Image 1 (cartoon, rainbow, N blue to C red):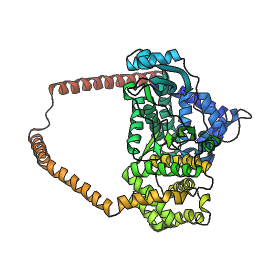
Image 2: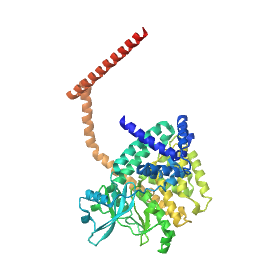
Image 3: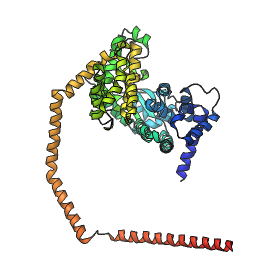
Image 4: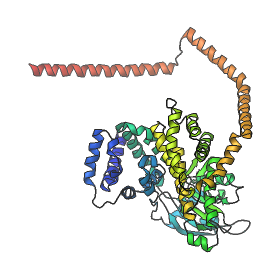
Length: 523
C-alpha cells in the first residue's frame, strides 16, 4: 500500500513536469477514451508558455526529471512505433551528459571493485573526460609485457542503482495503469517496453556484461578486414569498472578530418552499411547505438565502434525474415514478402496473404520510381511496420530496435556519401546470407541439426520412460489411497481454518451489532 502511494507520488510529479513542459502535446487525444481525453485536456492547462515546439518539449521534460528519465528517453528513441517518428528523431539528440563525480570518488570505486590500490593497477589515471547518467570515463595507462598501453576506464556512478530502481518501479506502475486506461495500448506493450528498459539498464550497470558484449562482437568480426572493436582487459574489469583499449581515431561526423587524413568517404559509407548488415544478419548480434559519436575510423582506415551498453540480438527466424523481406523488395516479389510474414507467425493467419501482398506493393512500387540514392531502407522498414499494424502484427521489439538502428546507420553513411545507393550496397550481404543459409548447403546443415536433435531425444527416451513409469505408479497409488498430507500441512490447514472461522464470527458479530443499532435508531 505504502509502495503504491510512493509510486503514485513519483508518477504525479513526472506527469506534472511533462505537462508543464508541454510534452503532453505529443499525445493524440483521438486514441484515448473519453475520460482520459478530458484528463489530457485539463493537464495541458498548466503548460508553460513558450515551451518549445514538437518533441523538443519531451526532451526538456525528461532532462528536468533526471538521469533515469533521460535514459528512458534515449531508449524511446529506439521505439518510433510508440512515440512517433518526429519524437524519436528528436530524442536521438537527447544528451546523456551529467556533471562528473570527483576523481577521488572514482579511485575509491575502482579500488573497491578491483581490490588493489590505484597505483598498483595503473601507471596513470586521469580526471574524468566524459560523464553520463550511469558511468564516466577516465583515460589511463597500464603495464603490459609489450610496454605501457593506453586504456579507457569506465566507472559506474555511485548510488546509481538505487536511483534507477526507484524510478523503474514507478515507470512499471505507470505502464500498467496506461494499459488499463487505453486498451489499444496493449499492442504497443508498454509494460514490456519498461521491462526492456530495465534489462538494458541492468546490462549497462554491470560492466562485466558490456565487456562480454565487446568480446562477443570482437569474436564475430575477427576476420572482417574493415571493422574492429576494442579489446577488454578482463583483469581490470568488474561489475563497476570496465577497462578496454583506448581508441585513437577520427569520429565519423568529422568530415573535414576524414578528408584531411586522406580516407575514402565513399568506401567508408559502404563499410558502415555492410558491417551493420553483417552483424545483424550473419551474426544476429549488433551494436544498437551506432551514432557518429560511437564510430571512428582508425589510422589503418578501419571502422571502429565503442560504447556497447545497448546491443541488439536477432534469432535465426528474425534474421531470415529480415534478409528475405529486403531481397523481396529489391526483386519486387511482394507475394514472397507477404508469405515470409505469415510463415514467421508475425501476421495472424485469419488475414489474406494476397491482401497483405497488395498492401506491401503500395510500399514497394513508389520506391522503384526513384533514383537508387533517394531510396531509404530505414524508411521502407518504417512504412512496413505501419502497414503490418493494420494487419494486427504485434510489435516486435527486436525488429523495431533493428529498424531504428538502421535509421541511424543510414544517416551516418549518407553523411559520408550523400549519393549512397543503399540497395546496391546491401544486396551482396543479403544475397550471400540467403544463398548460404537457405540454399542447398544451408538445407543440408538444417537437416543435420534436426537429425542431431532427434538423436538427442532418442538417447533420452529410456530415462523419460523410467520417469513416466514412476509417475504413473504414484498416480495409481494416489487413486487407491487418496492424497497423503504431511502432518505440518494438516496443522497449517487447521490453523488457516481456525483463522477463517474467527474472522467469520467477528464479521457476523459486526453485522449483528450494525442491525441492532439501525433497529434502535429506527425506534
